[in-house]
Length: 288
Image 1 (cartoon, rainbow, N blue to C red):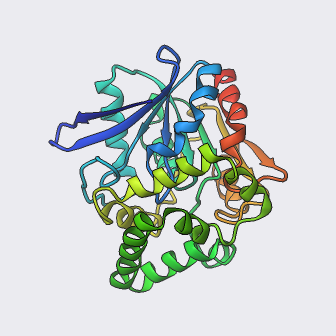
Image 2 (cartoon, one colour):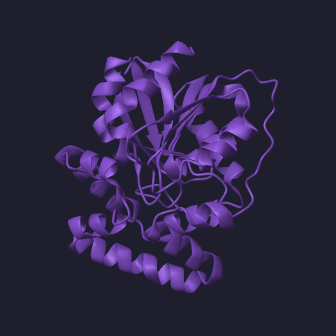
Image 3 (cartoon, rainbow, N blue to C red):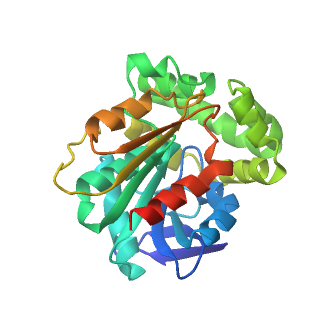
């Protein structure tokens, strides 16, 4: 793995991780929340095997990426576009995992000319009264509190940050209280569990503002229209036993993207991709 930092045109730093085949197909992989590019470090072997170059940027305020307040999710695609230009990449695939899903969707809406294909893995959809009821208790608590009282929600994030550093494994257990056996089996693997902890803690490296921004954007209106004539291959994967981002959220993407291939994974929770990312990478290769 390589962590790199580039300077954007507005003077900000953008940190990103590189995994997989250096000469492979460029694929921008967008992390969840609270997380950073470290959540993808266990995918190195699968990426190499499938000749995929994973480029995983941290969003503003996450890890070592400089903070910038974004007015909407679409605005983030400017960073993706500039990153690709700096790296000399004309076309790339995009993967949005969990909380990275909305940002991958914004790429489809705002920079489709740069995309070879778009892929949604356990992806968060616009939050409403119906689907938030089915989310995990920790996620539901933060989202509901943030929508009513940002100050209190920020205080909760500070507590998570402060005590998460001191009691790493306990924090993971609390966030996974709602998890089903399928997810707990995945997290029994030391490499995956430690990667998830590392990713979550590094998300707070520069404080809580980046996480706050993610949540604020998730709760905003990002129901963008997608040009049905762009002919970009689109794939949706979601675990049927996902207690964090309920699989019903995949229905949103299926409705908005009628040409998409939808794959509901049986006996799979939110973290199914850690052991099964081969299927995603193979599909990306098929769509080249």
